[in-house]
Image (cartoon, rainbow, N blue to C red; front, side, top):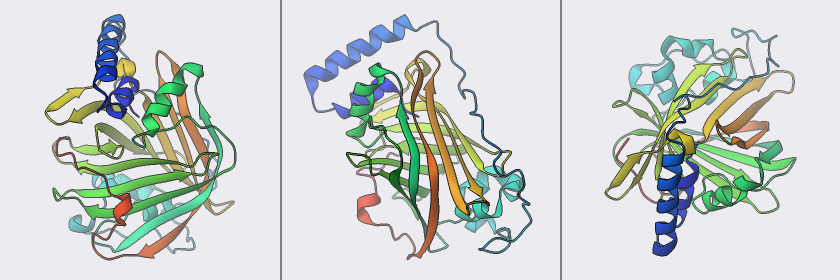
Length: 297
């Protein structure tokens, strides 16, 4: 989901000497990996069909599937999926079907049964990423988890969904992201971290189990006047699936971040329940908003 060298650059932005070292190292790596050409979208992860029994037209505790909405009320996920949105499990439709006009927020609370990182050399990069709330190096099992999804219009008028994830590992960690629908790119763009330094293209599709699958693509680094496409050789390709398990009546999520050269980098999986909160239009807790808003998509 993020370029490994970019994590170092953004986390050491006010440390000139180390920044020069990192940029030089990045240039060397770019030449070294010039011949590497991983696919822009990566390979989608295998999603377990734990819900093969579900009937997408059946009732749930929230009633029937979310009814069609007018374009002005459509969520960013409805906008991208179009008619395919109705193929999602009804509970997934509700979770991804609200917008800033609906006055609700989705607060998920549960447990991540597994949090893992890759080989030893991934540790310093993940640690640096944690300084701007982009991934983290901790591992563990059965860690309490919370995800906060608020819909609002940012300062540029773009419909935005917060993805604020808190993990109660032995050192509590937080992972910040902000998704928008980009008219310019005709897709969802995910801004990562507290300062939205990284903009990542996201492809979404309906998974076989009625869940929503998200796969990261091209990544761009922005800071001040600086802006460039990040080499995929240094980038983590993220595959995320969120689905609803009727058997346990909870949402499930699985995240896996890999690099074609270095293999598995980071991932987690678990389950959670959702509490729906009534909020005012554009009402988002201040501590969940980014420090800066990046205009470039």
